[in-house]
Image 1 (spheres, helix red, strand yellow):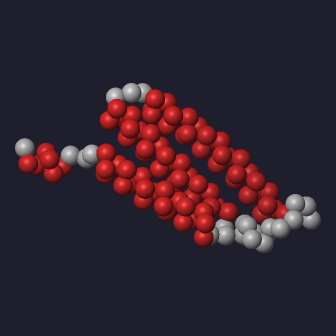
Image 2 (cartoon, rainbow, N blue to C red):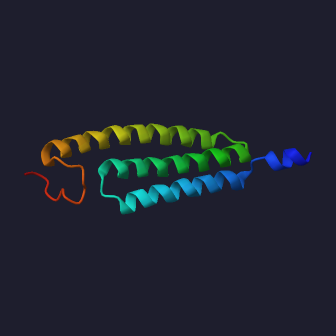
Image 3 (tube, one colour):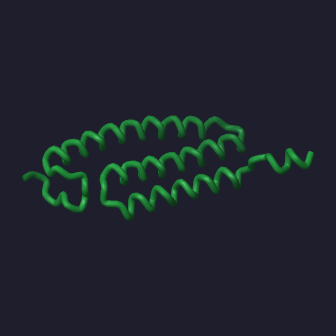
Length: 107
């Protein structure tokens, strides 16, 4: 009985992991200048949202969180594809992926 209480994972554990992922994602987005690292930060933020959706879905017994999570996964895949295409075009034009050095729309 005591081992089950020690090994049980509750809502607080999932929310703690989600907050850590969200914080790391925000740190990457706010402090980095590399476009690829910024995109990885955005993905961390979206994964933190997925963990929240799935946590509340599991503990409330509904399927809404699972549906929202699937929607966020599809949204993240589309965002990654479009953003990487933009980054490739920026690299072709400016020979860098540093977002602070890209200051014109067309050269």
